Image 1 (cartoon, rainbow, N blue to C red):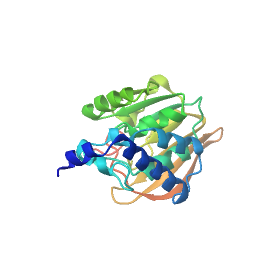
Image 2 (tube, rainbow, N blue to C red):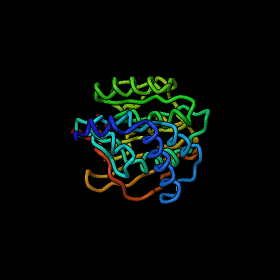
Image 3 (cartoon, helix red, strand yellow):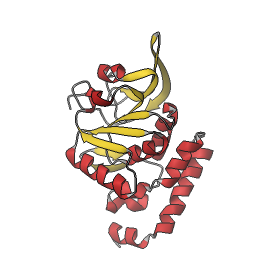
Image 4 (cartoon, helix red, strand yellow):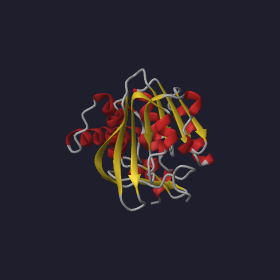
Length: 225
């Protein structure tokens, strides 16, 4: 039996059960406490953002490849980054590295509006298509170098970066509102730390939330390749 055959045999209710089991794992094993984040993870159909051949693995506890050497992050990482942002329902959010659009859709459940940047045209087109198909209309995805940010809609109360930078891009710091937060992996291609940046009236504060592993952030203020 091919992967496609396996996916066709897995009905909608089975994906729903897997999704609810994922949420339970996030709550019990990973100690995600923000109920708005957990609710979003329980409502957004992750399997629709995964290549068809891998859909039976959609709710597994690991990242999945989506093409061009990129991945859809492990569900814990999606939940953890979203929780660390502390997004409120009135906040505009900037996302760097939309990829499949799954993280974009999650953010759209907890924020007023999401402005997402993706450097790979195919990903940007597909992600926008899928999020519209599932009824998410408060997110816009643009194909552009995300390390520049999206100055037209700045400042942002929250910025989520879904790829690792050698250092925090200055344009993103400039576009962070006072009191706003940015969650970004920083480090080399082998060793990275998950950092939360908060902009205060006195300047920038950073917190370290431990080791992580992301693909590299490619762009003018990231990695060349």
